[in-house]
Length: 250
Image (cartoon, rainbow, N blue to C red; front, side):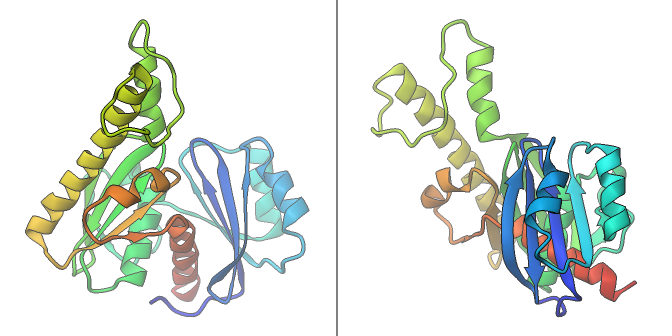
C-alpha cells in the first residue's frame, strides 16, 4: 500500500460523459460528487468549500474550459496526469504520449496497491480498457474495445429498424423478442469478451490479480466466472494514490 496521504486531496476524473469529483482525507474518500462538463468548477466552489483542500489531481480524457482550469490552479496546488510525470511503474508503451490519463492512473494505482503482483485492470466505461502490469511493475499496454453504451448506439445507428435501447439485464435466457435479443447479444457478447481476456492473461500467470471497475460494472460483474475485485471507485482511489506518490517524491 502507498504511503500515508499528505494533506486533503481533491481528485477530479474528467470522463467522456461526466466529471467525477472526490475528496480524500487520511487516505479515505470523505465525499464524492458528479458534475457535467459545463459546471464542474461551480460544483467545486459550491459543494467542496467545507473541506480544507490543499492538493488537486486531474485526469482528463477530454478538454476543460481553460479559464476554469486556471482559476482552480490559482486556488490549489494542481497536478495533471501526464505520461512524463513520476510514475510508480515502468512505462514501456510504444506511444507514451497517446496513453490516456485514465489508463496511466489505473496502472499507477495497481502498482501502489498491489506491488510485486501481476494485475489486470478492466475499466468498463465509454470504452472497455484492459491494462496489465507484471510483478516487476512493467507495463507494456493492453487493449481498447467499444463500451456498453457504444454498442447499443452502434446497433441502432448502423441498421434501419433496430431500436435504440438503454442497457438492462434481459428477463429471459433466450432473446425471445427483438429488444431481448439486442440486450442478450450485447451483454453476453461483452461478458464473453471480458472472460476471454481474463482467460488469456490467466494462461500466462495463474496468480493474476483482476480488478473490474467503471460505470457499467454492475451489468457485468455477476457473470464473470473468475474471482475478481469489483470496485466502482478504483480510478478515484488510483488518482489519490498517484497524487500522494508525486507529492512524496517531489
